[in-house]
Structures are given as structure tokens and as C-alpha cells.
Image (cartoon, protein in one colour):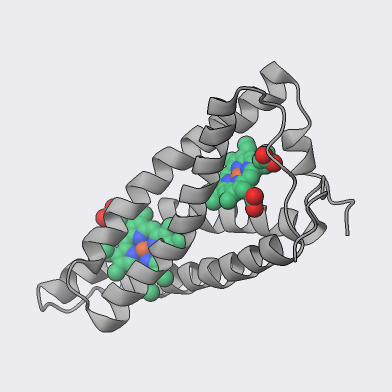
Length: 168
Ligand code: HEM
Ligand code: HEM
């Protein structure tokens, strides 16, 4: 059972948060190879040899996100996470929780839809993947704006606790 009174993120939770964020950033910046290979596959054409390593990198990093997301969810369930803090208004608290929920859902759905498209050629999975990445982009922008607003305007410790590696 998670500890209801937990007030910090553990070192592992902090490292997982930033590792997943970094992997997702790379997926967004370096997806051209995957797109070219995927387009060639759907048209029954030969993919350019130069695109293939980037497509495999996309698959490998995406699978890494899935593994790390499982670990992270397990830690959330067993160790727990600190309550949303610094925002007294219930609507803002709800927004923060909803944002976290949607991000969690997408760090599973994106790799799973990618797997369904790439390995099993499931109809509609590629479209779900592309729509999912758009939603993730906007939700993460909102999440980042919220974190920076809390840090610089409300001056809470919320960003610091997601940067602190002191907790075991
Ligand atoms: C969190 C993990 C992932 C993220 C953030 C991500 C992100 C992206 C992005 C940004 C694109 C370009 C879409 C576009 O603009 O058209 C894309 C395309 C694609 N990804 Fe991923 N991806 C992830 C995981 C995976 C995995 C694990 C696989 C396969 C095993 C995969 C397979 C594909 C395929 C097949 C496409 C081409 C889809 C299309 O254009 O219709 N992705 N992905
Ligand atoms: C793709 C990028 C990102 C993803 C997938 C992501 C995901 C998440 C998730 C799911 C949580 C909830 C943690 C939990 O309860 O287990 C969280 C918390 C947090 N994230 Fe991110 N995040 C990303 C980028 C960022 C960025 C760029 C910042 C800051 C500039 C940030 C700052 C924070 C902070 C401060 C918290 C703690 C919120 C709190 O304790 O109430 N995140 N993140």
C-alpha cells in the first residue's frame, strides 16, 4: 500500500520523470526516419537505407518509455506520491490531477499504439499514435507552464521537489 503521508518524490521517481521526459523529447525531435520508413511500408516501397536506423531508434526509445512508465506507475502504487500542493483552488488542483492522469495514460497509449501499428499492422493504430502525440504535446506544454507558474509566480516547492535527488 502507498504511504498516504509521503511529502517528497523518491530519487528513482525523479530520475524516471526526467528520463521519460528526455526520451519523449527525442521522439518528437527525431521522428522523420520513422515517418519515411512507415510511409514507404504502407506504399509497398523499399525504405531508404539511411532512414532505417532512425526508425529502429524510434522503436527502441518508445519501448524504453513503456518499460520506464510501468516502473513509474508501480512506484506510484507502492511508495506513493506527494499530494498536489501550492494551489489552493479546487479547480486548479483538479486540473493538475487531470493533467497527470492524461500524461500517464499517454505514456502507455503512445508506445502501445506504436507497437500495434509497427509490429501488428493494426488498422487505425498509426492514426491513434499520431493523434495521441498531438494531445501529449499540448498537455505537456500545459503541465510545463503549470510547473513554471508554480515555481516563479506562486513560489511553491513543487518544481524543487521534482528536481531533488536527496530522497532515497
Ligand atoms: C512514448 C513513446 C513514443 C512517442 C512520444 C512517439 C512519437 C512519435 C511521433 C512524434 C511520430 C511522428 C508522427 C507524425 O508527425 O506523423 C511518431 C510516428 C510513428 N511512431 Fe512513434 N512514438 C513513440 C513510440 C513508438 C513505438 C514504441 C513505436 C513502435 C514500436 C512507434 C511507431 C511509430 C510509427 C509506426 C509511426 C508512424 C505513424 C504514422 O506516421 O502514421 N512509436 N511517433
Ligand atoms: C514529456 C515530458 C513530461 C512528462 C511525460 C511529465 C510527466 C509528469 C507526470 C506524470 C507527473 C506526475 C507525477 C506523479 O504523480 O507520479 C509529473 C509531475 C511533475 N512534473 Fe512533469 N512531465 C514532463 C515534463 C515536465 C517539465 C518540462 C517540467 C518542468 C519544467 C515538469 C515538472 C513537473 C513537476 C514540478 C511535477 C511535480 C508536480 C507535483 O508534485 O504536483 N514536467 N510530470
